[in-house]
Image (cartoon, rainbow, N blue to C red; front, side, top):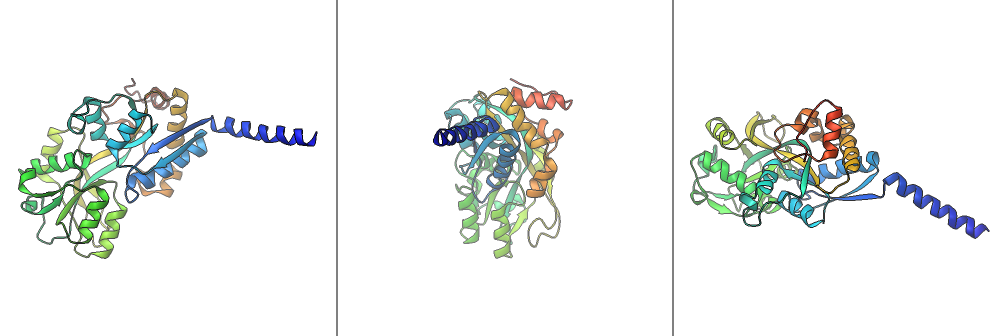
Length: 318
């Protein structure tokens, strides 16, 4: 009888845990271990796990495009992506022109500004125009960073052929700058970005190059997902003044097939805990209902839309 009772007790505990977790597990695609997506995604995932009863496993990936394709393949259920890249996927343009449009994901919420950070270790580079004939990392081919770099260069009257392009991913760009193999690199991520912070600590010549004035105006005129953003002084070592650049938005997306109630709960787990998340990661301070719902072109998941409607905000759900 004691053995039977022990077995029943263990089974009761198992079923109790399953009930608490809702029996739901989601894998979240993030980004490079040295980028903001990975660290921030892990924190957001933990708040969902603790407050929505949905176990979230945040995994390192190649970034936005990989995360969208991973959701499409069923490998991930959640992902952090650039707002411009998900726009490309939804419309089958740019990085998704060859593979075709993907409509198997929906928006949960905008999270924070992803600054287009132009980093240099070459004292001669003071503006985007100075990139001419320089070795510049413009991102992996077809990546979101690549198209951000193309947009910035074009707005400055330059093309890919006017620089000595290096097609490097996030980590490769940081290493190449550190080793002096390139003059500059485009890195698109929330500031401060750990890899850039480390570079500034080890190389006194590291600087952010402004993307402002007429260049920023043209970018925003041609592409509605860009907006002006100031990286505050002292974000990085030796950065004495604010640096103006442009930004896209880091966005949380979810599989279109995800349960409506589950998505409602995970949305609430994030936005009902803004203050706590802000204490764990600086980008949490940018969480707001306004930032979550504005400037995004892909329809919201019905579960997220339900949450925002309760807060008095109607979003396009589909």
